[in-house]
Length: 193
Image (cartoon, one colour):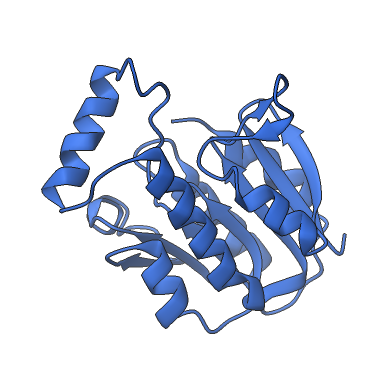
């Protein structure tokens, strides 16, 4: 858990006012992102959707009146079958990443077990595939002036590439005209700003 999403505020403040939405794929589990985006959307008079594979957020965050809490089988399924509005802010922070495959930490083992209980084999390959598929599905709906926030996506200086949850998403977005702003544990990308 981190508060990486907070770094996007300076970019969000530069957005033009329009009727595009804010979309979070991967609702918060206590780090505050869903509540934070709810407040940002209210300030900007935008609709906010938070999509997740469990009902945790819809039961613990029902008091957020500006948030459309969606429970789905996968973010990629929802973005393929239900998305029909322009997006100005997209936060990709779902499907957990295993930091070191040969030394799985207890908290990661708990996540692996939770995914297994839903019939999902948690792996880093599937994590990256899921994030890339979500981004491909969202791309036709991305506003010309938009921000994509990719959490848990550090830059590996020794190989010169991004890895983690959104590693494959970064070059895909650059191909589509996004500019990269690198941070310690993630990336914020902007277009048209």
